[in-house]
Length: 344
Ligand code: GZL
Image (tube, rainbow, N blue to C red; front, side, top):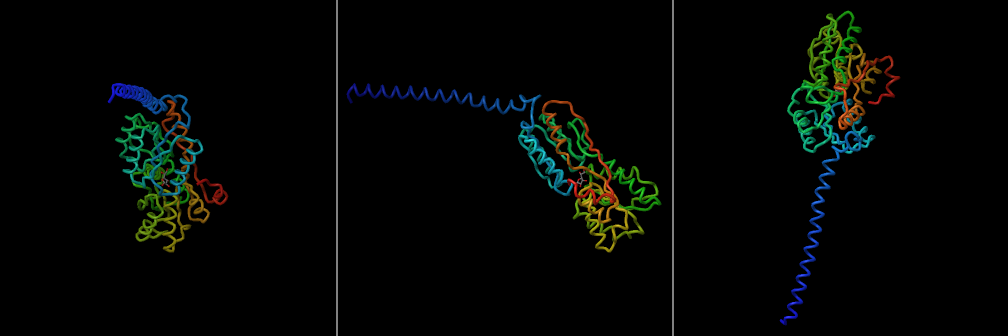
C-alpha cells in the first residue's frame, strides 16, 4: 500500500473517531439532564404543589371493604362519581370482599406506590395499628371512612362517618314507643367486630327500656343471603308474637332477608315491630309494604367530604379530627312519598 493511501485512510479513521466522540458526549449531556428532569418532575410535584395543590394533583387510595349491601354499593358510587366530577389525578380503588387481610394488602400497595392520601373504610375495628403505622412512617395521611377503628387516633388524620351508637339508641327509642308495655326482641347484627355492629348493639342496650329484653342476637354479616338462615333458625327456636314481639336488624339488606324467612314460615312481618338501619330504597319499600316500622338513617354518600378533606391534607391545612354525618329516622307514614327521591 502506498504511503499516500495509508495517510488518507488514517486521516479518515481519525476524523471518524472525532465525530463519534462528539456525538456520544452530546447524548451523555442529555442523559444526565434526563434523570434530573424526571426526578425533579416526579419528586417535586407533590411537594411543590402545597399549599396550592388542586384536585388534579391528588392521587387517593380507597381500599373498599366489599360489596355486601346496597349501602356499600352507594358508598362506592359516591367515591367514584366524586373523583370523576373533581377530575382528580388518580383514584386507586379495590374491593376486599369483606376480608381485612385484603384491605391491609391494598393499603400496603398504596403505600408502596406513594399515594398522596389513603381513605380507609375498615371492615372491622381492630388489627389496623401496624399498617397505619407504616402509612404514617411513609408520610401518607389516612382518613378513616364510615366505620371506626380501635387504633390510637395519632395513627390517622381524621374519621368521617356516622355515629353508630346514636343509631342504635334511636332504634331503642322506637322499640320503647312501639312496645311500651314491654316484651322481647331478637337482634340480627352486622359483621362481627365491625364498628357499625358494635356501635349499634351498644346503642340499643344503652336506651332500651328495662321492660324490653333482648332474647337472642346473631350476626348476618350485613348481607341478605346470610340473614335469611339466621332468621329461619330463630323461628325454629322462638314463636313469633309469643316469645318475641320485635326484631332489631342492623341493616336493610339483612332486613329483607329476614322478611323472606318470616313470610316463608307463614309469619306476617307486619305483626312484629321490625326496626332496621340505613334508609336504602329497599328499606323504604319495606316500610311501604308494612314490614318495617322504622328505618334509622345511615348515609353512605361520603365522597364529597372525603375528597375535600384529602385536598386539605395535601395542602397542610387544619382539619377536623372527626366529622359525623347528621342523620334522622324514617317512618312508614311518608315512605311512599320519599321513596322516588331517594339517592340510594
Ligand atoms: C354503616 C356501614 C354498614 C351499613 C351496611 O356505616 O358500614 O355496612 O349499615 C354496610 O349496610 O354493609
